[in-house]
Length: 297
Image (cartoon, rainbow, N blue to C red):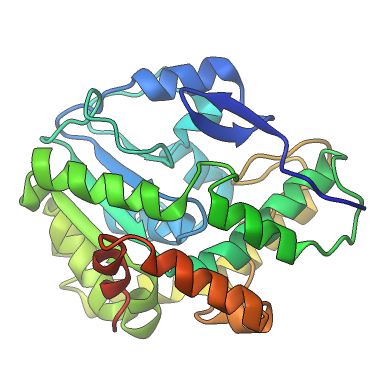
């Protein structure tokens, strides 16, 4: 089968899966966070759900047990659920690009970054699951070389990876307050989870910062935010209710949001030609160096 492109809904110049409702997308685009909100803002497949679960444990470790359905309610995904009902002091996640008109420097922003090579592989699997669930692609199809082309052209959901992050970094430098912005790097989370969880807790402050002073609580959070624990929870939810998922889906096939959780998986997919194409892509703009430098452990 010849895969030309991913079916998309284009709104305000950004591509989205067609299963997202225009009403909710418009709400998400227009929403300006409250001063005391915590905004988890990432490009897709950079570790959004991982960091979300860490934050939820830090905010309410007594009651939050890692349940996927509870996580969806406690940290809504704006493009999927809209903004109605969000009150001051909310925690929510979004993949929308930086927009100065709705940026609030008084809110806290957690920005998660991940090496674009591994993002491409994770995004490929995610996109394939959605496309096969909706009937757009046949089950079992392998089309990574074509997806890599689309990724490098920015012709995928949410657009060009480097442009997305370059615009965000420039916007945050110009309009943001350093004390209200935290960059979390996926690769550093994998290599130093204890230190990174502490860093997130100290950024959030209050109860979150106090809780990690207790070694038992910190160890519990480390265990409950491990790939193995989260994958088991996601698989359990999928078995119990196949229509539930932490990511968009259609029909009865749940979209798995915890796949491998590893660093460097792209080596299992990249041909020499794809490696070179990504190297050229990264080298094409001088500002990309600042993004790539953040992945050094």
